[in-house]
Length: 184
Ligand code: NI
Image (cartoon, rainbow, N blue to C red; front, side, top):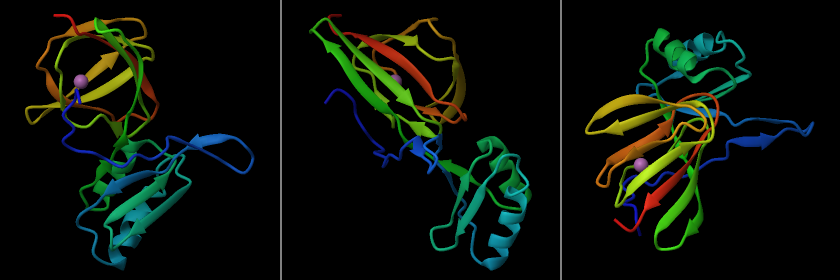
């Protein structure tokens, strides 16, 4: 195993098929630890339903979660905050498709649906990242969170030993091809 998975996360699909055959984004789930009663449900629902493009809001008191169909995640977190509660998006798993491994290079396509992450891992090899979408990735490393912009075809290199979690906290899918240099 070439990555050290510290936080395996159950994945959920990025897209689902509606009855009309059109695809729409899966609902996003938020952890809201202070949910305790029907008052919370009413307050949170009232704020979140005002966020543009929100189609449905479901508050689960027992699980302390809010599930929202539609809307921008940053605006939904802000709306829950407006109701008086801290909220954190619950992420699914990014997917890795290995395309090549000839002992010299290993090429993997990474796809990040909105609200997904790799989980914490340590890079065993120097590597090159080739973005195949524009977008932004959230990088969590050493207890710090930074946002890294991606531009299609604008590659960058990182060294062996890099340890981080990489996430897409945006509202559109993000993808890149990773080329690991196994021979150095
Ligand atoms: Ni990485």
